[in-house]
Image (cartoon, rainbow, N blue to C red; front, side):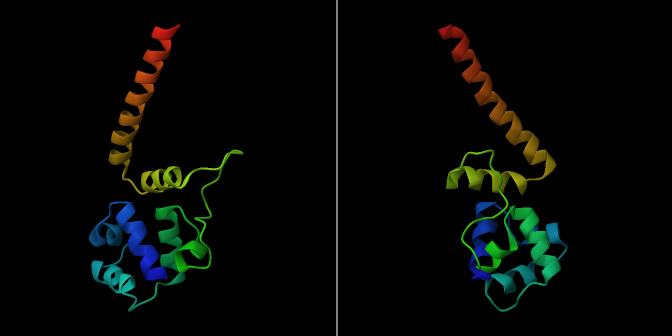
Length: 118
């Protein structure tokens, strides 16, 4: 289960094995071994992975189907919204800046539409 979840989270986050390995200070070969189910991570590696993918360790190892970390403010997020949050948290600072600018451009368009209707 861990191997499948790791690969899915990595792909959803658009990380290569090499990019993920760099983020957690391991070799890409180790990530490959994890994804093929030939090796299991240490607890320290699981902690790092849960932080990168914003999910619980229980989710990573298959003990639960809920990501576990994404907190709501009384609202439930859809799976698409959780996916976007997870991807965002795995972005580099530069990638986050680009993403934020893109989101802000949508927000600016919405504000412009509101103003023209008033």
